[in-house]
Image (cartoon, rainbow, N blue to C red):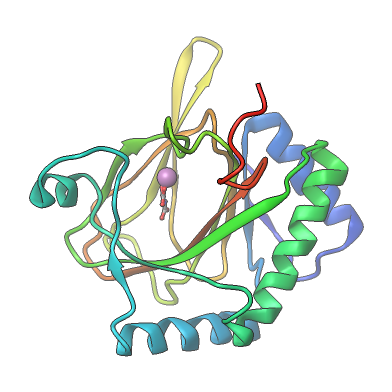
Length: 217
Ligand code: OGA
Ligand code: NI
């Protein structure tokens, strides 16, 4: 499936990653973030955990809390660029990604949103698409995994369902530290398998237009 790896984000590397995303609807890049940025994000994560800022994530349907938890078990905290100054290097990296999506994939993306997410042991997120009726402006999903000592058996892999030549491929992505996963939000169905250990990630979306603007047609 061709995972790519590079700490150095050269022009050529970006071109290759963006081509891969355009062709196969997703791309995985190992060691995408530096050890230093990994440390910065984890310091922030632990700080938010300590201050009890993580909250039960919702899903786009109504229902009982228990039922929702069975579908989606993570706890999240939305990032705020203006406020979370310590994450400036992360936001600069996302600007670089945005610019490359524009240049190579001809995507016009004018907003983004990011949250950190913790899946407690025993939790999962059922198969879904990241575009909901009320949020159809999500174009590209960004995941940065943060699990330093992840090993087989820990669970929490992301399963990607992909249609290719009349059959459905399933791809398992292990949530290992510093790995980037990008996929097209409108067509890539995916699922977080049950995790057996606490699972950490940073998730975001590049949007076609600000959520509040709505459709022009
Ligand atoms: C999501 C999601 C996947 C992951 O938050 O919509 O599918 O690997 N996350 O954490
Ligand atoms: Ni999702």
